[in-house]
Image 1: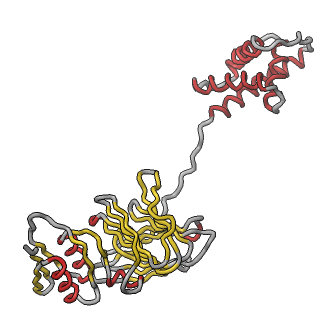
Image 2: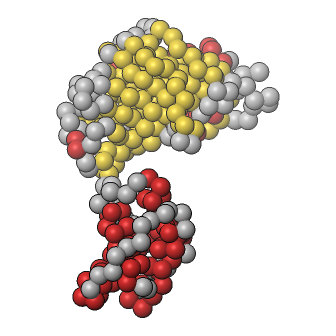
Image 3: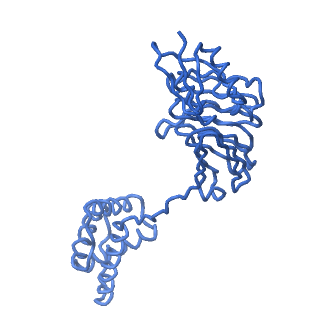
Length: 327
């Protein structure tokens, strides 16, 4: 590269480095760097001159400049070295791969309850969770360090009494469903095999959403005290109603799956989980679904009410419950 061109080039690159070029000149050099980055060219001492010539030609072909004055040999040599160093560093920085910091997997504490078993848990933020039979619940180890306190009810039923913290919302993920609160008490019921989701609020208010991929679909922006939301996955029907009868915190034990359309097999599965029974349901033709209320306080009363609502018959032999559909 000729000395006068080195002088011009180093002036342009220095101006680029310190943000002193006009937009037109900056765009030309940016475009050149981007083109070289796409071709994955790494600059070395060996071809720095040829790279400099290309930048010089690109700039000179678009911008009229005054003829630079000649300088002494020592200055020219220093300029050439500076140019090669600048180009090398600049291209290396432009082409340097992004180094991703490997994140450690989140550790969870998992709580599970067997049939006929219940469990009460106090979380690190002061929230209380009461797990009902047949439930699975996960809590991340960094719960209190996150902007959002997010836990997971993978299946079953749980009553939450959330410690109020307006700066850190509390979120429960249940499959595709998200329930978000600040500080309140409520019950969530989710059994994936039953294709249903229920939230019943005792105090405060909650927000309920359903995830479709990365899209959040709002089911209720503000479900308030004494309200109950039911979502049926089969027909995508949302129903919001007043909770009636027992207090909301007892819904899990007394009015489980109120007014949800279920088959006798699904109903039998719920009863079996609560009372630790093996349930056998004889075939039904045609298959029917029932909107029922189940009273968990007493097995005999629950079965009698179910028989009156569906016409089914039942037999109990030790731990085996046999359900025969009505005509």
